[in-house]
Length: 455
Image 1 (tube, helix red, strand yellow):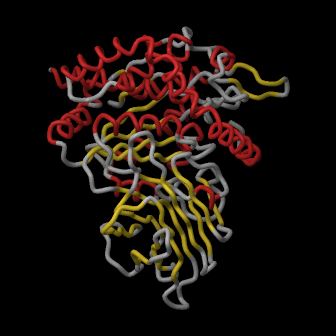
Image 2 (cartoon, helix red, strand yellow):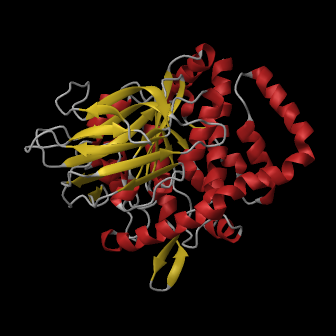
Image 3 (cartoon, rainbow, N blue to C red):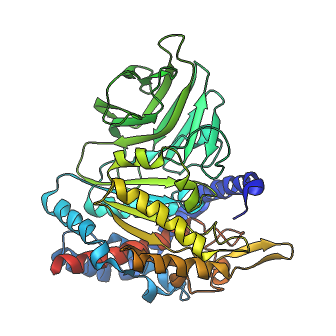
């Protein structure tokens, strides 16, 4: 992707892309399933029945992907495997098995990435697949992206009544510290409020009865009052309240909500601003909590430089950390594999120090084009970025899923583009493209999970 001076133009392009996806592309993947389901419904039911006999998780994702893949023969499904996972993901598989057996507790997954993740099509479909099969513990981590003037997932809607200062971790030299979401917003306006609406996804109900606000809690920071959709106060966050984490305040409600308003509530004149890092939404049910942390333009080094990121991530207590980056590092000419390897190690090692029981799964960047004076051309450096990630995983007990190989390798982006699975920049995908990737990766993980619990 483009470097700092061109990020704002890229943000505008991503905004346009997201609007188009919300209108049409998000529906296209499901439409494929609806159109073709009647022709093989009996066979699909047989597959589901057999799968349910083998293990008490559904195979709806498999049914979806099986209906779509025949249209795209260039996708290398044989490469859709989770590699190096027998030891790396063993703790995660065992926690999944325990959850599936007892139907109690939560398994926490965190997905860290760049613009491919911020839009939440790829990570959002993985969230739906995991929660459909293993239970829905809530929407997880969100951020008021609109207050930061950037695109947000289609599964949430946020708005604000004031102007906030904002910083993304992709701009490390700008003021404001970065926390859990990779983005920070701040305002001195005492009337500031943020409205949050969560949207159900399929049969998944994302109403919540517990909210954790990640925010600065020093003497100069505002308190917050929480209101429901008809403006009844349902909770108050006092900065002087004790918490297990100095950057969080948690409230539990008597009822579940899909819409709330967070209002600045300065208690005295010494409180002069609000600074917000993220918002965690839970429902007190057992299942999967899948937190998405994505920032347009982000690289491994940007998360390494985020002041409070590791400290606040510890609150989420991840069982599995998925990292999907490398696109930005490999976008411009002059890619340095040794430096990239060091940046990967810095982030993974930092998370491991505070979360020693967490498993790690890295995904490789897909094939793509880069923009030059001569126009958009194939990018050979993505292969080197992919190879560096694979080498790191093999040497450091991390599993990996190879999107580059699944796409078909060098030059394959053109086939995906001609098939209508990508954006015009031939760097990002559209809703259908991301959802195909998500289902392929999920089924690869589910296949290995089944093997593990049989042994």
